[in-house]
Image 1 (cartoon, rainbow, N blue to C red):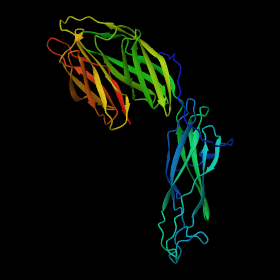
Image 2 (image 1 turned 90 degrees about the horizontal axis):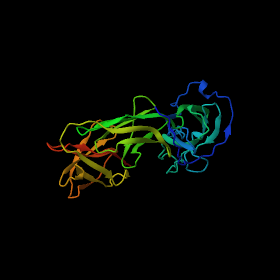
Image 3 (image 1 turned 180 degrees about the horizontal axis):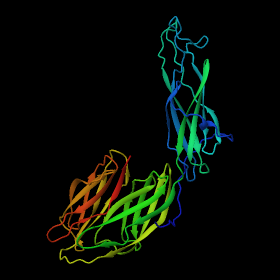
Image 4 (image 1 turned 90 degrees about the vertical axis):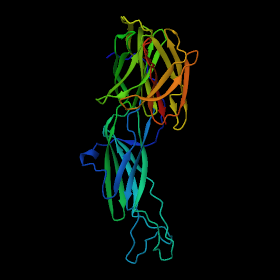
Length: 378
């Protein structure tokens, strides 16, 4: 794999204020159980070391029995002369221990609102048996990845308890290397498969751009996760009408609100191979009006069909999509090329998918496929 030579570009995140204190890391010495008699369902957001801006991570837990039970007379205990049902849990604090053993000082969490009784004898009230606790903590670019710990301490009338959850914090996004099929040999007879591979640590998304050094051709790809934790891959197809010469692979790796671009992750060559066929070649360019859209919105698929270097007038172009994570392409619709070879079709994508146009071959003309466009539906 080649080494990246490009610079990283960052996007900012948000920050949260916690005091920091240095203490021996003893929290994980004991068993860490995220479900106890007082707490269940501890959920933590996306935990990773950011590239630059702070990563504020939210968490949520379910608190059991937040209020006192009815007394022997069937009445709800209330606070003083009010109608508010008395709390069973009086305080909950959250403490974060980093991988290096330092502790983010405990923060008190907001307790649920107290329900009120609706009768003079305090026997009628809608008292929940569980409540949601929410909080957040901050991971900075200087922090270490690895196993962190969230510890919740519950002060309950008559007894105190604690529960904890081990949290795996992923490392910063880091480029390891990349490769592209080299050389890419294109012929008149068939399209040539091109494989892109990348090794990137800590990313949640990776996109690629392959472009000729003379700036006449480019292909945009969305990479998929490989079999190993840090591997990413994608495939595309080149036909005989792609530019020959030197090409460059550019990668963009993202996590959270940040991304890093590697402007020269790899280089490769495209050259023409031999062909004995007398069929005429075809080519189809393809693009979309937007690569990111809201669900329910429409986009236009468009391009130009060519045969032997001229407009492929009247040709029925086939449009295909492949759902993200799927293995095969699915036919969507036809679009007829006009006298100038141009075609277009309006669609309403329902999910993240790759799109491309295909010119079917005939007895006198080779078929061809366009490059691939990824549309992110949000």
